[in-house]
Figure 1 (tube, rainbow, N blue to C red):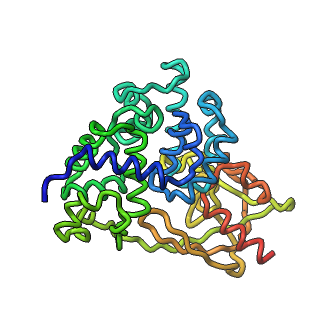
Figure 2 (cartoon, rainbow, N blue to C red):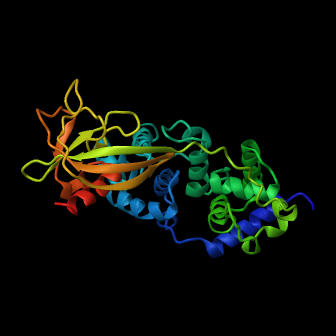
Figure 3 (cartoon, one colour):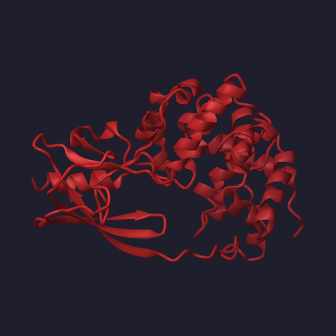
Amino acid sequence: MHAPDPRTIARKIETWFARHQRPLPWRKSYDPYDVWVSEVMLQQTRMEVVVPYFERFLERFPTLGSLAAATDRDVMTAWSGLGYYRRARMLREGAAAVMERFDGRIPSTIEELLTIPGIGRYTAGALRSIGFDARAPIVDGNVARVVSRIFGVDSVRDYWDCAEFLANACRSPRALNQGLMEIGALVCKPRTPACLLCPVRDSCVALATGRIDALPPPKPKRATRALRIPLYLIADRKGRVLMRRESGALMNAMYHLPHGDTSLLPGRPLEAKRHDLLGTFRHTITNRKIEFEVYVAELRGRISRDCEWVNPNAIDEVPHPSYVKKALRVWSGSV
């Protein structure tokens, strides 16, 4: 077959997107701030999970200025349960940088966008193309799969080159790049792609050569770790539970339940008298499959400064990982 023609492919993708795009909230106005928030949330997170978080986040921080002025605690609280919490901190830092260095206006050039904290090659391309409808390539997992199959290529460098060919040949970078992502999400799936529904099936090298299942080549899988972690529900007379603010780089400022051998008192582990096991639940974080065991425990001595008593009915007022609510549900079903 002849080499795929970027201009023909781009036209077909743009036309398909105009007819089949999903009605997502950030597509109502294509405000660059809305696009930025959505793209950060969508990193490593499914669309159906992101939509309600996006809507609540925009209610809490409707403008870039309101996000820049917020505290880390406010932002992390609004992000609670979405995971990969460093994204939230970097988003707030980026908003503050735009307010300070660009007078509150998100820049449209790749060069300027890349100077903003938290913005890399993909996010810069997404902001420029989707937020400003200006030419720029993007490559995420969906785009990589689509261009790999269309052009019959199998390396990250080739994916970016092909995405740039299409961006330079299109009429609307906004429609093209979102169309590539939508086709990857809805049609050109990793397994059992719906090739008969694909708008560019006549130009697809992988389909013509019988390599749909071989492209793109699979990434090496990370080994899965199975963990079992005890959680301690320590309550005071007011029914509040003891939580600890994390200080590590991964979940800084997040509130966690005492767990494992976590130290609540300086220099020594938690002294807890375990009662009967209340229950267990499973939770997955990246390549870790965790089985949490929920115990009621008693605290001896004074708590350290990084601990706080929290009303479980007001848990949404503090930043916390999603497993905390699961543990509280186990506890509430037993008290």
